[in-house]
Image (cartoon, rainbow, N blue to C red):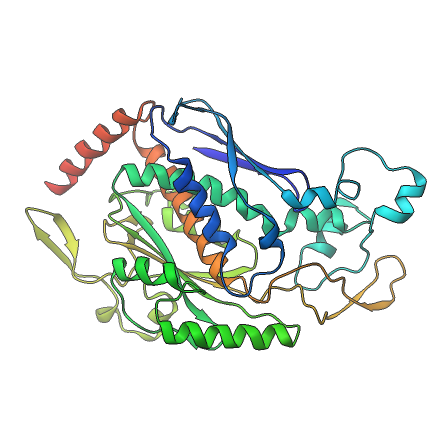
Length: 388
């Protein structure tokens, strides 16, 4: 499976094309749109999320609620485009319109792609960079991930996410999978601890008042993954490496770990590695899951546990200093509409990027022209590894 997205933040629409899905997979469009709604939520989001509805349409590849096996196109309309039709339109501007409507950006924002992208693609208007590098693009990725979650759901594989930290507020509680699903859904910051949720809200309010922003840590958990996804035989076939790359590709993400992660540096091996158990009903299992569901770049069948850190959003309402690319004089950076904290939304994006990589790995491994063919292949494989 492979996919591409296209579209700019204030352009007419976002589009995704997904190729390689099996035919006859039932898809629930309402359930998919509920995933997009989750990305829009979270305490600290800006006014843009009050404008966009983030509903989508299938442009191809789905008929009467089932996939056809042909490329699937998903389109999300940007409702805000109606206020940007001249600024972001595809037609040339007249000289008069150039002066009044183009809104040229020449002061790059520290921490963004503005300056490096402008240098690389030789643009004197940095809006040509920031419109595509905007986190708005992740709406299309969540739509693709939502489609992948339809596949995982049909294969009895569950995936969820939560926020573990915002700023200095850390939720150190231990929760079952079902508790995370239940508690994160009702928390304004997708955190399982209700008291910590209130602390996070106060922290976000304080940052917003100062014109500042804050980051955090998110966690994604996959229950009942197929064992043996990925491979040890070459670097680019290791599934944990692919997941790590996809997570880091999300705007503002700067670190990723599996299981105990960086704590392994200060923990002896005898307390890190997961002892192997066996019973006839389940086959091989592990006594613990410190490695986060991976050994040798392959899934063990234990839950996949991914933690990732998001830096504070670099668009600040009290901007940092920058340099005008035309005059080379120091100026405060350009201000674009932004969020004080997008960690809750980022947890949803992270969840869907993991879903994309997991679904891709499944489709890479098993025959899947037809969904029933895929299900039968997986069941035969599970029986074999259980009896191994």
